Amino acid sequence: VFAVPGTVDLATEDRSDYTVVKNTPSMSPRFRGFDFKLAFREVCPRAKVSAVPDGLAAALGVACENRQLRSALVLILGTAPAVATLFRDPSGKGRFVEVAIWQSWVWFTKIRLDDPHGYCGGLRVTKEGLRVKPKDSHKIPHHQARIRFALDVLTWERLHGACAELPPHTQPSLSAEAAAKVWAARLQRAVDALAERFHSVYGPPEEVHVLGGNATAARGLVTAAKYVVPESRNPNPRSRPRGAGMGGTSAESEEELWQRVPVRVAQDDATQQQVALRGLLYSSHFKLKQVSAPGQDPLARGWTRGGEIYMYVPKDGRSEKEVSADFVADMASPVEPQQPRCAIAAARRRTAGSSGDGSAST
Picture 1 (cartoon, rainbow, N blue to C red):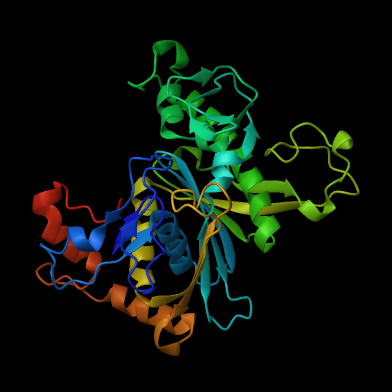
Picture 2 (picture 1 turned 120 degrees about the horizontal axis):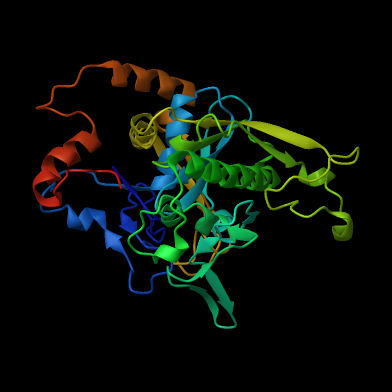
């Protein structure tokens, strides 16, 4: 089982046989698909190969590690930020787990910037459509930025003055402590805005989980998301304070209801890496029942016109509680290195010679 960036091709009739990645990297017209099953047929002729979007793997990992959690927003800070959601069967019977990726939320949601360091890249909106600006295109300073460009790896590197792809004058070269404060302030704005987005679809999330290699810098600095409940927001735009709806804070009033949601950040990088891997293993206990994917072009799904929603149901008609019990027992069982029991370990062993590092998760 492979976690892959982007989304998978949903054109196949067999819902248990999703192996083709369609839009990685995002917005690249030169990339039209990669079939994992075909690529690994020579080295793993008898293996069952499947692909899961990496955002879904992270959401399933959060579900696996938090069995009582009914809903959650998952933000992954990697090369580019990604958003996934978790929503469990509200009846409590464990009949399904709904996970989704919402790349439109990070590509098009803007947050206010409280620092003078602006952003690099960005989107250019024309009559012909959208186009990604070059990396060295920048607005420094600037009062706002799309989450996609406010919290990407280029921003992280240039805050430290360590980005080889950008000119020196775009890099403030802050100390580790100062860079962490700027990063945490931006992350705070982002989780505030994204939690409100979540609320508009599912209702208030119980928790926000932040994963990714650059997440741990904000541990202890970002502890809760706060937003105005959309249903209580003042409908008169002229009376809305600046920053509302952009992860900003507006003056609290009797008319507006505020929601606070705890934010969980892994204590170290090794811990957060295990989340997606557990999600991959957990997915093997479910079958995909339904997929909803707004958008016409496969390359547009997941980031332009909404999200990509997957409904998983436990295999053999069981409830998720039964799946969880079996999964815990299976994970606790010792595994001999010569006879790996999980697909990930097997793929690592069989592909180590050709891939260089043997990694089964991207």
